[in-house]
Image (tube, rainbow, N blue to C red; front, side):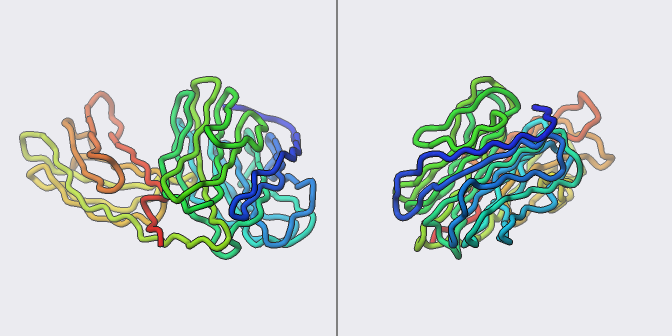
Length: 340
């Protein structure tokens, strides 16, 4: 993880994307703000009325984002929740403001306290739907040199924006993507989708390290919006204990400000438990397993998650320590939406 001090602001204006269905890249900027609680970056040119601003940020996980705003009074929305890098030492998130006001624009991200590092990246695009801009979001965190989000269903001619913070190394854009910002050796990239279908953001890093990769897709003007239908989990845990076991299964959504418990189910004497819950937000979830006294259950468990995995999650449990054993899974926005 990078530890930064001081405030270094970088401005980069790159060549525009080839115009397609009216969506074009116009300009971008970035700021490396170190331990500053407030981090700002300004566009070189005045923002055009009715455009889209996409903001990407990364900061250490000891702090939370309090606000995202700009000097023109545009309203910013999160493109999904903040994602914690594997290991939990760095957070990353994307925000956007649609149907922007015209004029000189500086964007500011404010954290809950002085961080170890604080980077932001801002981008302006034209030709994006001003009333229903967000099409799909997907994210993942992992380790290695290849960064990728889960596939998400993206509309025809949509803008696909990718953000890849890494703990070390130098990332390069994936196939078909154009690099936009590389401040602090993180990467923002974009491309225009062709036909509607499954897309992901991909990058290649120079070193095998921990990383986050986030994709946000935005509808071209006139494209239909996606409707959130939620993901229903209806399944059954089965423990191969061979004897009567009682305990609980809990489901949590991992959040930067603290994990949220979404449900808890009591394990029956036959070693099984049915569960049912609807997930309305993309992100990282986990199941935790405890016996009645709060200790680990030693054996394995299977749970089917239709629509989220190709088969089943295998939870391998042991009693080598006193911590609660858990299994994580990711929900992409593609799982949550139905294209109209």
